[in-house]
Length: 83
Image 1 (cartoon, one colour):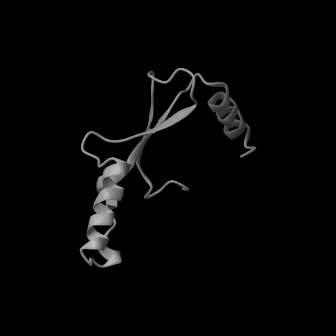
Image 2: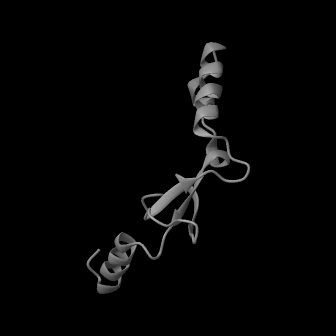
């Protein structure tokens, strides 16, 4: 799928009210700001660019609001075979 390797998992959320979806950091993930800081420090120290990836440790979790109209429309399109 499109998000394979980019997100850790996708879950249905009851915390979202106005948004159709949100990317959240896992409990032990590194924030994007901290990741940029660590990358800058590694580059300044002369590290190899191939070793700068955080891999699966920094993958976000995609939370979806099942009651949002956009998500409901996507679900209907998938069930109708239009996607």
